[in-house]
Figure 1 (tube, helix red, strand yellow):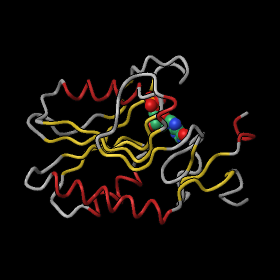
Figure 2 (tube, helix red, strand yellow):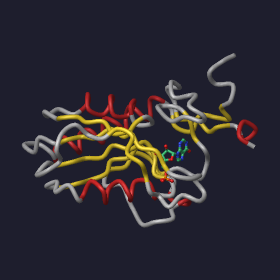
Figure 3 (cartoon, protein in one colour):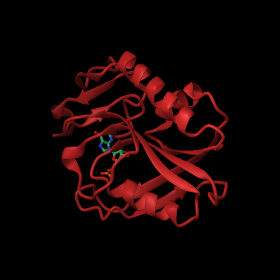
Length: 180
Ligand code: IMP
């Protein structure tokens, strides 16, 4: 069975992603030069984006990983998240950048950002690869964004459906028949 069997179509190709990652990294390199930023990868969905992005940044950075899980189902979620794996380092007086795969309702990221803001960082910003603004339930925007996309369920480049497809190099639209 091919990896792409459950993909309806390619939404963003690996070439388009690579180009955008370069642009984002260039912006971050300029804005965070001399700031020794602390980049936090939100597992698991962001791991490929994160690895590509930091290798395009031409300044010293430090990295941390966080894993979170939401309470309840997506449709009833309050956005309250449980921290499954926390950062090892303190965020105090650090210039923190949260690296996220996709902003959907915004509930998870909003909760996470508020939680991390209470740890007294010097600054805290969000960098997201994808944004589905049509689905937003709470006001939150990425400070650095790759692509705004329409309301489709997407897979690939780190994003999963039922833990699969993370290794697809492109971002694809998942066939509706897979989840309905
Ligand atoms: P939010 O709290 O609704 O913004 O949830 C964001 C999280 O839901 C992301 O970090 C993803 O893990 C997941 N998610 C939302 N939309 C998609 C999608 O289209 N494909 C894969 N995961 C998604």
